[in-house]
Image (cartoon, rainbow, N blue to C red; front, top):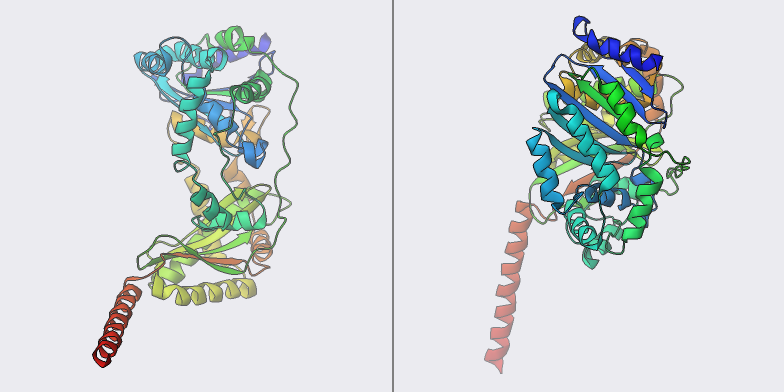
Amino acid sequence: MRCLIFVCLLLGCAPGFALDRNQVEGYLLPNGLQVLLKPGYERDHVSIRLVVGIGFDDFSCEQKELPHLLEHLLFSGIDDDGEGGLEKRMQALGGEWNAYTSSADTTFVIEAPARNQRKVLDLLLAIIQQTRIDDDALALSKRIVEREDGGHYTHLQRWLDRQDLGQRSGDQLAVELGLKCAERSDVEDMTVEQVEEVRKRWYASNNMTLIVVGGLDRVLPAYLERSYGELEPVEPVERRTLAGVTRQAEAERTLIHGLLGNSARLSWLFLEPVLDSEHDETLELLQRYLDWALYDELRLRHGLSYGPWSQRETFGDSGLLSLNADLERDQVAQAVAVVRAMLERLREDGLDPQTFERVKAAAIAREAWTTQGNSALADYYWGALNGYADGRFVDPAQRMRGVSLDEANQAMRLLFKDAGWVRVEKPLLGYDELFWVGVLGVLLVVIGGGIWYRRRSVS
């Protein structure tokens, strides 16, 4: 109760405080639901995120789409007015909502006028508690999930997935290494009973975090304890062990994307090392350094790619960092040679001190403006939940300042200690190749016609 009174007092005088992004009032309701409340400068608006601790990684390959399917079902309606009636209610409140399922969680995202925040939260609570799931709603949601995943999963698409064809480099390598399922989860055989079981086991108060940022109602804490406090907790479910690297992958592969074109994409991928301290911040600074190094080599010095980039992705229990460039298909070999030489210099000479300090300073400065507005701030808290404790989020700028050049060099050499995997995505044929295939076809027709005419003349 004291905590509740303190939060109410804080909300009452919040406009007088300067906004400290990392300081957030957080507490647990008696049923275990975590609440994070942050007054924002946009007083007429609130951003709401309800994060449920259930994602694709909590299920086997055959059932991976279950949390995604349930996410869509929860928007199917709470009464006879169905999905349309639900959307009309949100529109009448001036709000917009959506939901997203990722590897780690399912999150409901709402933007709404501050004056209606409790009514919007009532509607969100209603879909969690009152949505009626039946066979018709399940069939509709299955079609929606299939469309989002690329359409009906045909036998041909299943065969192509088994051959590692048609996927982007990171996904293809993850499948090859055993970090990702080779085939899509087929929703066709999923039942109402399965979905209801997921809802019962995972959509519980002690598996949720509610984030509200913006013009907070002064009685919001009391409202949340009275309404969201009614959600039932469950015995915590043991989360599934994440997939690890279990197979070897080919060092170099060409992946066919499309039938015709002169473009190509080079991706050079590496497994991220596990660092003892400042893991994310060190690898983020290293990624930003590599962004500059690729830009300098492939665009400024050699003119091979307009906008090369690096990318970090997570599959199972492992991270992949890739060096990427969009190229002309006849320049792939040259680009591979340029990137290989760049990597050899980095391994031998290390990071350039001046460039590293410049990139580091820019990354730290970016933290001051990267979360402007209530929506961006709520999304930031959503992504940084693991870094919240004792009323504060970890300050990434401060942790970046603690990353030294020696630590970055050590991380870089661990990252590049192996050769990595080279993947080239390109269409089956370029325009020049198509031309010569056409010429060859014409020649074969002419020669075949000549032979046929000669034999006919002789006979």
